Length: 260
Image 1 (cartoon, rainbow, N blue to C red):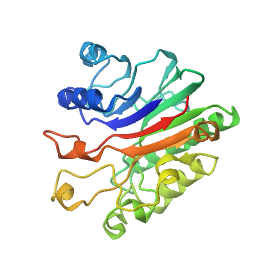
Image 2: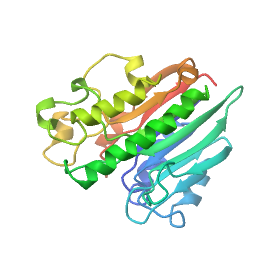
Image 3: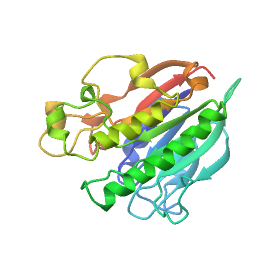
Image 4: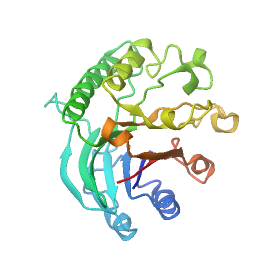
């Protein structure tokens, strides 16, 4: 089963690009971030015509996540537990049944946190604590599960073009990276790093300052797999060429193949 994650940066603005990529890459399941659409205005019919069922957790103009699947989606849940007052649409999860095994897929759009310090960074760290709690449940339940999406976390220096440039950014601050490490240390596998040790593998290039042309990117889109899912990992990759096309997102898709 091929499962992909893609921060689309506005699904209505980039619908042609999304549909083209779906036709080419043929993922079985996709988690989307930054759909920037309410549930009602999501271009559901066009995506369904491409062969996918759709579940969304939308928000007008900001945030928003979705799961697209060629397989039935069961037990869909929206919103990261732990704060009933949090109205930001950043979390969706569902179970997908493969040919022989099921997997719990959690799609996330972790807060950016800038400027730091400040209330936005406080929200980011609090959200990561809630994520740690949900991740702990997945590990304790010995579930075949993954958490995928735009984490807005640069885990290591190898994951950015120049660590000095990002030293004061919320994506790379020591407390951010430590919070991410606490989650992975529960027993999760970073699918890309389990597949390659190469550097200069990025998933995001800013629109400004010629970042794409200079390959000044960062790796902030991740797949974290429970041990039960990691045992089924056969491949992980990034569709980098998508970034060079017309009206691209500033992110590119990342995907895993799992023997399910």
